[in-house]
Length: 144
Ligand code: RB5
Image 1 (cartoon, rainbow, N blue to C red):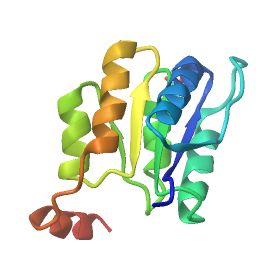
Image 2: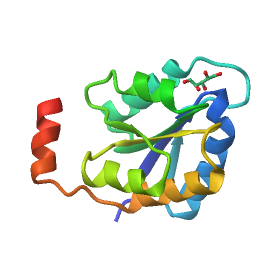
Image 3: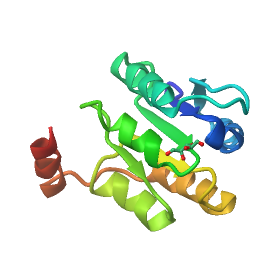
Image 4: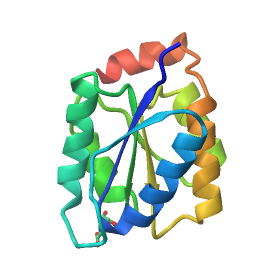
């Protein structure tokens, strides 16, 4: 079976989490597509949300992870793109529900608002949880 590619991007507020997540993703057996940023220098988070939207639209990854300081700005930016369902989560329950009910294709975390252990657990749950379909698909169709 081909290895799934997970795209990942952050601004400076999420950079440290991004680097930690990259190591986790590789340990879990995924290929990682790093869309920046590449150090702690201050950058504009919408550009990294746009990088994610483009990577998914182009088929370079099916799913992705975004991180900024709060997770708010980068999730607002990502959700401007019609093919993106980006879910800002703060615990494993919302990480699970965003997959089961919302078929989220992008997980969003706040690098300054979420404990790193919780964030790592959210990543694992997001990766391992499937979409339930059915009535939830009907609702996603309404969004689209
Ligand atoms: C950057 O300072 C910060 O504003 C950004 O990471 C994010 O929290 C925006 O929503």
